[in-house]
Image 1 (cartoon, rainbow, N blue to C red):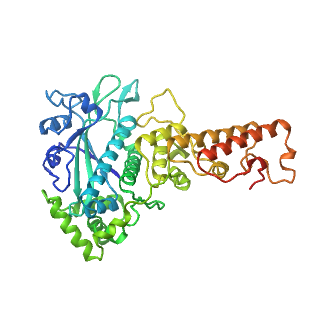
Image 2 (image 1 turned 120 degrees about the vertical axis):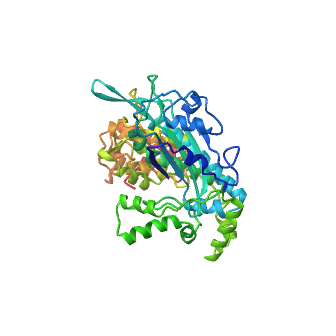
Image 3 (image 1 turned 60 degrees about the vertical axis):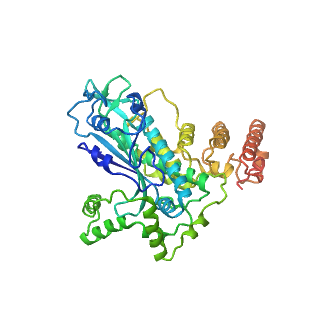
Length: 467
């Protein structure tokens, strides 16, 4: 999950002094130190461990070394805290699964953060320019950000999360440095969050052999990690809900107030070795032994398909009665139960979003018709749900186009069966010769695609009578 918070004051010291010794292996050379991330950071010569002076400078919109002002000093937003949080079940495994499991989860988390930041750099981070009274969206070279990772919440519950603290300082494609267009970051938050979640799931699935739950409107969790255990280590959320209930608050503002009121000072310097002993004790207190969690690991990893109901549901909440590319990314990421990598999400979305020569970054993405992205029921009956693997997905997509082209050629618009022969007694015999030849050719291509997809069992589409 990705939460985004605007920084209206230079809070560099907060991130620099909040040492994270609660991690088994730090992502920086020394515990608690952040590392630079972002293409624009590399362009400024920033790499490795975050230097405090350079970090303070970029948040002020200045060159990291010379201190020269690079953006307007009238900017009210100095940066953005992009907070990537692992699902609670992943944090529980990180806490109780042992050091080797914790290493694998940290690696999967780090890869997912990189994938989500790369997505945001390519599609969400933009600059705005005024030209003739119009506001033009300009692509940028990416982010200048410090990356800080922690393993606990303020209540010392296991809570694996990373703060990617991005300066509002971007280098536009027109060569100018300026503040970031925050509209683009907000617009792509859901998509970047889906990229992080999906990439984390596929990473943990490959490394640890876990499987994931998939319930409508709920975040995926590791199968086998009980809700009781997740609840035990969610005391921070419980504090917020309790305060809201006591105050009778129900709004997002009430939630934020409860978050602030219940926010206790963070205990700095808690060591991973000490915390694991506390966590094991708390788990045993509710009747869960650490050994029980080993049962959720090492399960067989199988080729997966998208949950088409979840895909359509994710798109149903998109505005304007249509969908943008970022909505397609969100839908694919949500519908892949055991995850999909950030790179594969880009490939899959490119198969469904028409290419364009116009700038498609930030808030400037075109609105697409949902019917061009959500497969018709006749396609799902013929080919099954779409595969997650891009190569297999391309086979599915090519066969779907053959079916749609056939239906368009012969004016099959509303027939529920794939090639529109219908349920009449005459069947294929009623077709003119030219259509019969086309019908048989298309049916053979669909059967060949089904074989390549490993979806055996004859569809007998040559004798398609609405089965």
